[in-house]
Every structure is written in C-alpha cells, then in structure tokens.
Length: 230
Image: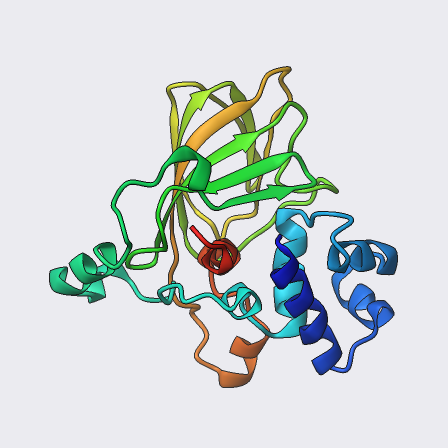
C-alpha cells in the first residue's frame, strides 16, 4: 500500500470514531499490527484487507480514491460499445513491466495488475506466491462473492477449497465460485506464478443496511490498484 492509501485508512478509522483497539476487536488484527500498517511499517495480508474494508464500511476503491469501474457490474449487462469505451480509456494498450500496479503482502504474495483498470468488472492479474507464501497468514480460509479463474505458469500451489485439497501444478488451470471457502499456499521451495481472472458480481442481499458491512467482491480488494499511478 502506498502512503496515500495508508493515510486514508487512518482517516476512515478516525472518521468512524474507532480507536486502534476498537478496530482490532472487530478485525482480530492486533492494535500494534494496525498501527504498523497505518505507519507503513507492515503490509496487510489479503484476508486482513477484507476485514478492514468490512469493519470500516468502505470499499478499497474509496480508500484509494481511485476511479475504477464498479466491479458489481456484470459484463453481460454491458453493451459492446461500453466495454470498448472502457478498454480504450487508458493512455496505451501496452503496460510495460516496470509500470504495473503492484501490491506486496506480508503473507508472501504479490499481485500485479495486467490492466490499467478493471473492465466490465473483470480483473486480469499476474500473481506470485513466494516459497512458503499463503493467501492467509493464520491459515484461515476466506470467502467473497465472485468467480476466480487461474492458470499456473510455474511452480505448484496447494489449493484448499471447501472440504477438499488440490495440488495445482504448472500448466494446469482452476475455476471456482469464490463464495466457497478457499486458501492458496505454496509449500514448495520455488515461487509459484500464475495468471488470474477474477469476475466480481453483486451481492445476493438487497438489504441496504447489510450492504454497508459487506465486501461486495474480490474486485473490491483488487481495486486498491486504482489509486496507484500507472
């Protein structure tokens, strides 16, 4: 997370009238860890980002002040003209390696956006799990709305999905409903790298109050890139 995002995270907490201890009680993240995240001394994990967004009642798009396309919009509900307009809104269709928006997490995972911004609610990512890296620092499985499609380029990943465990190897692909509890872990000695497509969808609930505290999709987390200059 960049300095601007950390500042907005703290502002969101203060505006909500929450102390570090208050937020810690709601997220199971220690006050010292929250302080380190706000001060740039530590990076949050994927699961921590979900918890913070839900507790503060904001989206990461708001947190980053980005202008990402609403991830709750389904591609099938958009016309081909709208999709073309969104795709052409970037300055160049080519994104050099050194200008990709990157998010490095303390759980040993690196997300690199392969788009300037989400198009039609779809994220296109290069994801790397370092040796020992995991999508969760405490081993807990996470859930969120949306669908994930992955193709592993190199290495191997242990995939915990529901009550089942799979080993995803280089050259193999994976697709699943993200509402199923899941976690990725690299138990090998070399990095595991793959390409991810994440399709977000609107939450099933239409209750206005429940939506305030719900993380709408995986795209909400990935919108963190929207505040990064490319």
